[in-house]
Image (cartoon, rainbow, N blue to C red; front, side, top):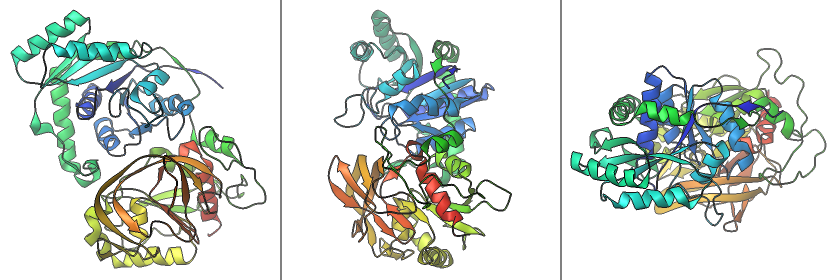
Length: 487
């Protein structure tokens, strides 16, 4: 059922990466939250780290809107799901305003997300090395796509009062409102490493202080009333809010998962064919326990994954491989997502009781879904430190960054997906694992390059590929069914 959904909203974009989108978006979220507003935080693209800061700023889960991995048709429904009941939604863009999936035009760009959400855009401009030229820059971004509504500019890294006057005069000539001016303030910068900002879970106290400082900077430099007035100009969205329960119902029996893919058929009562055990979602204590790795080493996850597992009938319990020496009681399924295990290899290795428990669980055929960091943790070693030894593979840091969207097809039946299932995903790592694929590979990449990758053995599905299960909820159902079968 299509309904009209309306919440004031802004998309925070920039001409390029490094302009200050995260600073402004997080600061705005925190500043508006301090006013007592319920602020819904969102991030365009596949980034896991920025949403952690958004969550600190708002007290709500940071959610991603990825038109490549989930398909353009899911952007508005996923947004409506996250923003339900809120007073304001702030969407932080990705890269430059018009940058998207390589070779795919506007697909997965901030501009496309803004159009799908019918949201006004605020352009954050790094003004540190320009004055009157800022008007030409902004004019170009405002006129490039008439369907993108550029509602104003926030000037970042402004050097002085005189600099600010020159910038304002230039933008006044261009007819573009200046909604904020932020001076250079390195004291509120957040630390970064090889894959971006340091995740919140690794520096929680300092991160709280950073978010508070960002809120103060934005509060002092931005016209919050004008920004809220701009947000209120967004028209209603005609869409049905995404829900995990409805998504699972609609995905029943499906086995292919790209946004434009066709169903592959089904049969029998194997996990993933739409057959739901009668006891799933039933009486308390009968829900299979799915343990999800968390803590500082495993910070990458999408909120919708846990919601889908819960809707599929699982009891989701978080554990920390850095501290917990055993899996949660009754664990019937294990999810180990992404993060930075290379930063904690000695500590992860030192937790021998948990490594042994994970290895025993996998050896007994327990369903395990591992992405990127999870893949490294399941290997024999990481930078020479012993890991769980589930996979006959060794991982190490490298100088090369592997980054980009992928189109993939499952090559082997697993607890996560049936062979033939198609998914779009994302790779983002500076490690290599040797060998890169097992005797039964997890995925065959079909775009932008052709290669096989990952491991499927017994109940284990391990791969570098990050996926968003909202694109194919049947994987959450299939995994929950596999866990239920082990109780």
